[in-house]
Amino acid sequence: MNQITEQMLNHTSIRKYTDEPITQEQVDTIVQCAQMASTSSHFQAYSIIEVRDPAKREVLKECSGGQKWTVTAPLVLLFCADLHRSGKYFDGIDKDVLTNTECYTVAVIDAALAAQNAFTATESMGLGGVIVGGIRNDVQKLIDTFQLPEQVAPLFALCLGHPDDNPGLKPRLPQAIVHKIDTYTEDGNDEMMEEYNARVKDYYTERTRGKNTNTWSQQCGQLMMAKTRDEVGFVLRKNGFLGR
Image (cartoon, rainbow, N blue to C red):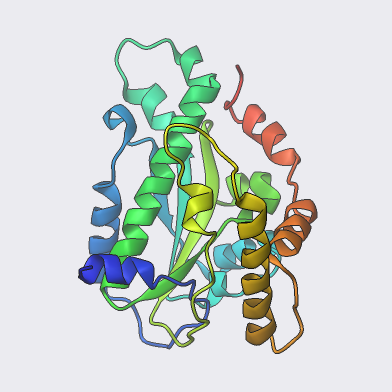
């Protein structure tokens, strides 16, 4: 254990913030740390938009189904998959390659790794935050609002600030379920899942004072069916992604 691993093991999503602002030096450091994340072939296939305009923050809130922290957080960063820059500046490429699934996957992974670096840096400063993927409820509106060119796609928002809440650690899946050796095995998974579902049910029951008594299986099943976002693929193809 060290300071970094202890910080990571105590990560929790923070959605309520004090009025204390984040300094420009902190913002610059957070973005610099994001840029130092691993990136496939040094493509750096992402862009980060700091959202200051209150009207645009309201759009994020609307698209995310009313998640008010997109408005109240002192700092909001919109992470985008970006192949537009690749098409504009890479020498000697067939731009049709940028429409394939692999390139989109690279851009999404690059953006996710950058965001995680940014989040880790943020927490090292005593700040907290939450990643909001709900903005993808209306990808086209985000493309229009932020004037995203072809082959730039909004993925998620990172809302950050000084914590004014402590929701407690949400139980993760048992390590033996996610950590396999040499092959994908399911030995003992059913028993471990039964115990895990009970733990998550206790967590939600305590956190919501009995308003939510779902297990992990129930909670995730409901959430998945409530936001299938089938139109995302259509909008991405329209914007030059996933052509093949």
